[in-house]
Image (tube, rainbow, N blue to C red; front, side, top):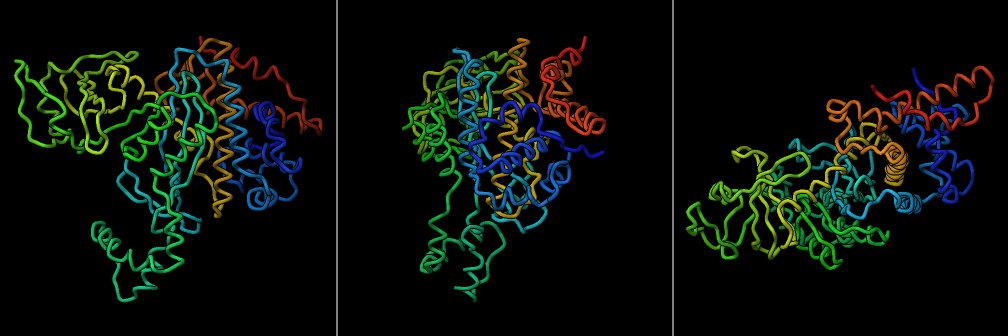
Length: 481
């Protein structure tokens, strides 16, 4: 049964007032609150379905015009949200907690190609190229505090410049190769000719790589005046241009290193179990070739929370990046199976501190899972870039509101917020999941509250006034003995 939206949820009513001045009139502000409510409580989170469920709206196209025609600015909303979060979480930050900025990206997949900026992006986890939008985001983590900051959309070069269209127009006799390497070589061959066209050159100059977008997100995080010490990212963003920008901002960084990256042999010494120097091929050796040569006695067990890792660490040089701290980590004493390679600019940090700090990156993964699975990050049908970026902005707002409420609940009960995605969290720690009010459970509670209100509405033809005791007392009936 579809749940009607009678009024905004208590959470939206509580935290949403700070955004009132961002909208021209009360109608726009009501659309803002109703859309957030729909994202939180409806199973189908498409704009069309949210509009259908609005009890007070006679014209179901109002919500569509809110995204396509209303003059509100997503940047203003996002800046206000970050400022709200920054002020609200002060009481939950502990001095001993390290604060980190995380950079990563995710795909919002689609079945059709009628969306602006849609293209086939590489899904590295599944080794395929789905039609999608590629969302590059920044995330802030400090102890129990974790929330998204900013986002930018990455556009593939061929899509943004309309590369194939210009090749066919300017070089009609040339065939565009399908194979990846041949296509890359063809790009290099035709680039000088295409850049002679003024229109193509203008589009070419607007193109931004993911590394450039990561630098912009770093600058935006600094502009928010957020206090953080380290930037965390995966191997896709490990480039000299980005790490230089981080170091110029006087921040530290930790990244995954791909196994095929070269190490400078003359920058370190490796000894066998008898203490004799192991001769290595010069001038470079790949990490995956070095690992089998490292004696097992060189790996030391470290404890991070309740997990033990066996790590080898060394200061050495990597071409282009220079001197770094390298940590090779296994999750078993037999040193079998997969291993993770981390590097950092902090040459004085222990392997334990580097592993422990990099694990702070995990909340951005759970954010992607929760925002897609519970808040509809990728469930939009708006075709214009302006509209679907506004949708993303409001998903960030909904997530932040729920996180604020969860922080308040955990502070009242002295509990710890979940760090795992909801699916694993439900399986492994059901009791904590109920008592901590994770995103899905908060949505369930909101549905119960709205159902009570709708029942009252049907009986008395008006909505009950907000009962603040519903959420303040929810733990009494959710605690599992």
